[in-house]
Image 1: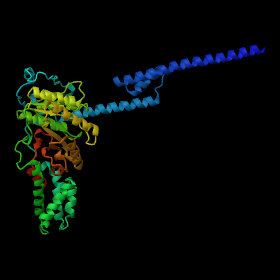
Image 2: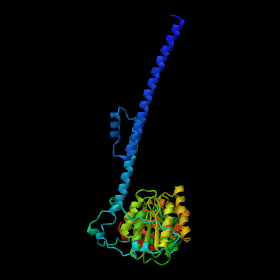
Image 3: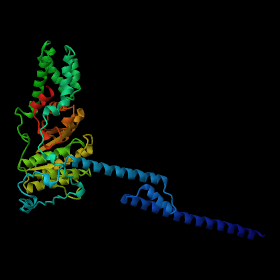
Image 4: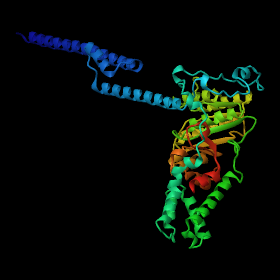
Length: 461
């Protein structure tokens, strides 16, 4: 074989090898693109269909493609998270239904000044204001189920002393036990320990101890009744500074009412904000007020549904425009509507947030500013809902919310299940904020005005 023929043979061999590699690469690329396309389509199907990840894998195997383990794990995690979120939303909605409204045939309806149709037919006094339509529809699945007839019978009002039994035992019960064990209490160390662990707050404890030290003699400190009386009088003085001298006789006696009053309600998730708003709206409507609730919590999916359930129960209107995700826009339009349609009270709900979340706190500040563009002196009330079970953490929440917004009053909830009601004294003393309402149970009438005298008698008796 000549040299030329040898070169030709080598070139031919390399050509064949190159062609084979090219064919393999083309086939491999086609398989890769097909696999990727099927996996992407599988991900889309998973988001929109009830197929499980295992079923998805079987479908891919039928196509001759094995589901990538990493992608499979990712799909499983997403499916678990999706199912968990759906379960949580259903659970929250069910909790609201359990305490919520019944079929209309079971309700005692409270007549409002005008129906929504009559209000909407009136001419607006401010023709240049565009009023969005109110969404008053509730999905059938979100409607509360009827409850038994006996639940509609007027129930006995829970005595405050019974609701505050846990707080009384935590504070006065332990103090009284000191005398029972024969302690002379000369140095007040044991009294100090009990007070510090009663969620009063350090500044409040120091004031109470100073009062006992300065006003009682050594022999008087040995008498539990004398010490109790001294503590009672000092706590009463603390409340008088924020609550005033006159005890409230009506639920909303301490509230600000204008031609159209705007109340902004804030608080962390789980404090009972939505429930408190519903009860406030219901009792305002029963007193003859025309009330509009603004669904300003656009961050939580179930919030709007829960608020709608409460508006059905309270027989008041809700402002919840579809497709609007900016809470400030909801607040602005709701207040505009309140002014144009002559509502007595516009209650603006807000997203629950931790007091440490700076960006979310800024969003509430923005809501306050846009409300003032409609009514410069509004909001007339900025109500902070606090869970009494949070104890000293509730006091920290109050400090941050008050610093950011200028809170005008506190709604202290869940006192019936708490032993930390002493935080009410700390809020009044350290922040000089009035306690305007307290929640002592699930019933509508368990939202009550705060009476300092009754509160003190209930925890120091």
